[in-house]
Image (cartoon, rainbow, N blue to C red; front, side, top):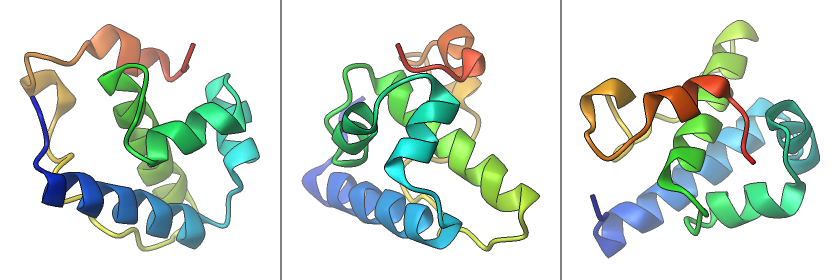
Length: 99
């Protein structure tokens, strides 16, 4: 699935706002997900190595924010259950690790 330019920009802004609201640094997110801050930045800028990586970050942020009673900005393109998207790999996403 390809996002339109508008969806890509919206997703980029949604990631940035949710990271800001979470109070987490890119390094903290990276450490939690087993990768580097540079990889997280690349994903947040909507240039992931694998499309699954953005869903890993999305899920991590939403879980973290929920656990800390922080209201997230809803994602407008990355919605629903990732199991329902044929192009995603649930086993990769569920590992919650970005290689």
